[in-house]
Length: 521
Image (cartoon, rainbow, N blue to C red; front, side, top):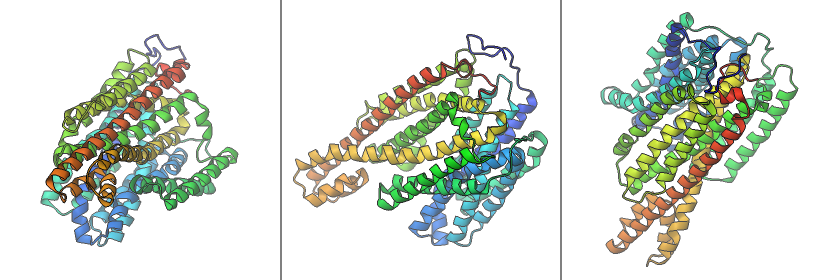
């Protein structure tokens, strides 16, 4: 292959044919649907809970079981796709998702809905890695691979934007089951058009699926996903830590098995590739940081700035639009300058957005919104181009496995971000609030309740005498802003370090730095 030009554009690459772009639209269908499905469920949860008589625990399982199964089965489905064919598995997954969605829509009980959502999670695990692997095949050897991946990411964000609107319209006119029936026509269209437009591909040299590897993979990822979710919600309790430890131990056994078995479910040699590991770190760390900051800013908008949930949701639209714009701009910019410079630049812009958030106060929520919009625009570049680096670094026959690793890191990264940065926010809030409460004429019970969280402090203040109530509420709001500053500072510093790491690691590989579209393996 020819060496890349100084601008990072490979002269031996060609333009993608129109058929590839038409096929991209088909591949984008499940991505768009899955992101819509995530956002509409929260709107439907109150109505379906009333109709099905779901308890609080059942409501949590209705929400969480999908992500548990998705994260747990991604690696297995990536390995399976490389063996039996990516298009074939995508069609199987689309059919299963449509059937499970129909069953969910007409669930007679909370238990039945949980079971349907579990099947939807397994089916979703077939769709995400096969979609990205198919894009890799469709645009291999073309100048538009990074643009195609950016468009695919953009579809996910568009779904997040459309989800609440579509869900709201459906719930205004129909029962809660309608939000699940959205999947049926979309998957029907995918099943109809997919076999005609999407190419089939598989790893011809792959052996049989190793059953023990599948068991170990599920035995590692399912407990880890469960534990991380519960730690994010309930804190570091002994039960969650024990489950996490079990998952990690089984994960070690899984890695050992992959190094010894003739036909591994996951090729661990992929991690030796510097570009692959760096891109994976971008995906994981980016997910952790964005999820954590998004959590504390969402709480800030409602509990500190006093916005209603609906109004806060509307104010977050510019942030999502900025990210979509970033997905579009990054590949275009990468055609003119080296890809690793665009990735590092995006991380630096995101770090600047987080730094801006540190200047906010209880009444300046516009600064928080501006900072999040800037950060979202910046982080789009490493997300889209990092995926391009990761997919290009993996051999074509391992494309679905590589995609599944990236998706798994993203799924777990979001949960880890809520757990880690959420815990940091709580600690910073308590550290800032307790000295202020010690100077007020309030008892220890009141202090303990106030430091447990901003929502509890605001509610508590309404029950106190007006003078003290105002002082407690103001102190709680200022303490939470201090915690937002702490989280934003950590996020900004993390992205600066990540940007410098990208420059150091990807610059050393001219093909990765230039955004080469062939295999780096």
